[in-house]
Structure formats: C-alpha cells, structure tokens
Length: 320
Image (cartoon, rainbow, N blue to C red; front, side, top):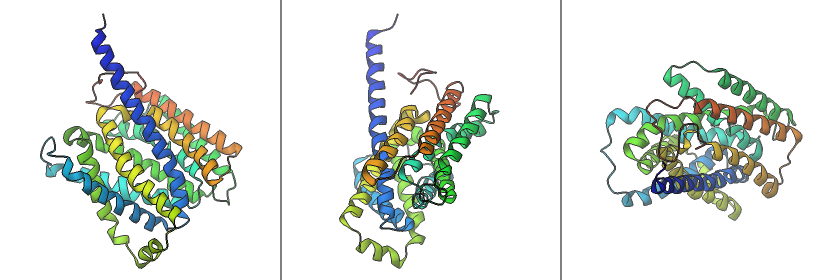
C-alpha cells in the first residue's frame, strides 16, 4: 500500500520539476527569437562574446553566495570539464549564432530539438550498446525532418543548407555537454559546474576579440541591448542554472516536456515578434522532428544510463 506522505512528496517533487522545465522552455524558446534580432546588429562572434562576458560577470556575482562545494574539485575531472566548457560555450553558441544568420528562429528551434536524439545516441556509444531498431528509425525520421525543413526557400534565410548544418552542430553540442555534465553535476553540484563551465568557456572565446567588437557594441540600439541582456541574464545565467539543477535531479535526462515546448515557442515567437513566416514545410518538418524525438525518448526509457537509479517521483518508463 502506498504511503500517503511518500505519495505527496512525490507529487510535489514532480510538480516542481515540471514547473522548472516549463519556465526553462519559455526562456530558451524565446532565446532563438532574441538571437535572430541580435544577429541583425552584431556579428555572430561579437554576439557570443558580449553575451558571455555579461553572463560570466553574472556568474562571478553569484559565486560568493554558493559557499563550499560538496567536495573539493579534483584535477582528474579537468579534461571532462574543458570539453563541457567548449561544447557549452564556443561550439554551441557560435554555431547557433552563425546558423541563425540564414535560418529563421523557428526552424533553428526545431532543428535544435534533435538534441535528445543525439543524447540517446551518445549514451549508447558511451555504454558500447547496440543502437536499437526504434532509435535507428528515430534517426532516419529526424533526418527526413531536417530535409523537409530545408526544402522551403533553399536560397532564402530559412533554407540555407549551411545554416541548417550549423544548427545541427548546435544540437550535437547541446547533447555533448548534457551527457558529459551529469557525472560532474552529481559530484560537485549544479551551480558550481554551471559557473566553472561558463567562465572557462568564456575564456576560450577571448582570442576572438577584435576591434569590431568595440565598434559594434558602441553602436548597439536599445532593442539590441534588450536582446543581449535577455540572452545573457535570463537565457544563460538563469537558464543554465536551472538546466544543471534539473540535470542533477535526473529530469533532463529525457527532456520530454522541454524539447516539445521549446521549438513550438520559438516558432510562435518568430512569427509574432519577428514576422517570420510559417510554411507547410516548417509544419511538416517540425512535426517529423518531434516524432523522432518522441521515438528516441521512448527508446531511452527502456535503456536508462548505467548508474542512473530511479529517483523519487521519476519511475522507469515515466515521462520525466
């Protein structure tokens, strides 16, 4: 017989996790629209630099309030942290910012939803397991979805093949730092990992600073600053803090709600805020990609990561 108190705790835990996922989905979904706006005023490199300079400053403000970490950082974890920092900051953000110069915010949001497919694939590779039939089908459907999204106006801003390839790299970078981060988050805590990865990743961007950075930033409009501050504070400092917190709870290992909401929000936001058109190929390609994500999530439900025990409120097979 189920203990009423345990059941109540489980419900509260699930409600908190889902609430965080929904808020994070809203923040990250609209981030694609903010990037599209900022890309008109800043080069992809300068947008990445300004976003992360502000975000790193935000992390440094938070740092004194963290107190001591669970355990002292061990140098053996440095190589993993460096890869996480590179995937999280330079690789993810440069590829996305370049991609959104030729791909609409909505299409970018849909393509980044390939992230969980890559997460499952990376998990399989790291565990040296065979790719099951369902995952293979999901990958094939995801490829079809990406092709459908690229059909519309191949020569136009939402159909550039190079831009689409760049955003797919973004999805892979997302999967890479999500998979690699989990052991460190479990070991050191969510915020310490988020802050270390963010600051190290920002340092990796320093060689890209040029004279054009000062020139473009000095001419940035109020709308441009609003977009950049949204990306730096809400999407990066707040968003990644929430992401790593959810990762620590086991919730983001399957990302079901988040990955369904983000592309939908980015498409709607692009249409309402930026006037970006939604074509039949956007709808068909987006639906196909989300079907692939659903299949990949179902495949992952049957093969949880080694060492990832069921957590209270997130039973095997449940939609975390």
